[in-house]
Image: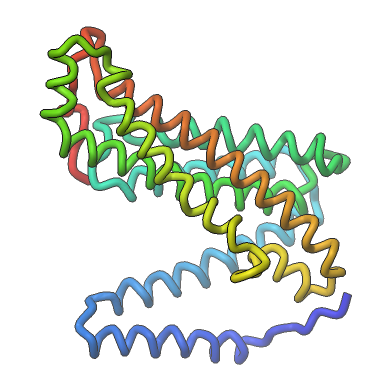
Length: 265
């Protein structure tokens, strides 16, 4: 494959566009200049580090190192899910509700894809395992964060409605059922929108990267279809599990609404 290498100058020219955006945000009093520059710096440092790590890992394939990297990715994703919620659960639940759902869905679907769909030997080949897990975690994280934020925010805003339903004899599942459904829909909207416009409005990242690296377009398309299906199912299963677990946590054993289990993030 004929890959055109990028020099530091090339990356610097691209970074200048980000600097221009930060300067424009200052002129428009958006208070985003610091966030833009910090995000750009974090992106550069984090991607360079993972590039060095993956280069070494590709040369020395070992399940232990792969597991360590996967756990770091998982813990960071779990922290981000918690941090993106305006109201989140108090204590360990603030981390575990989203993280556990993300772990079950993302890791299980990644292992399924590596062993059954792709059939790579060994199944923990880093060239396939790390990118697949990263894409699944990233998208599942977004869906779960949106869904949990919608669940907790709406439950707080409609607490009197929920309590009135409980007083009328409804069980907790019925009292919060419509909020659960709307929260799950909210979490699935980003990936469903991405699937709806793939190939017509946007060319997804993995497909674009493979084409730029010299892969045949049809082969890149097939991999992208696979990835989109995996991401959508992982996001769906993870979001449903997180919302159902979170909704149950909002009620105690006597089916009383317990909003004291939430705190402002």
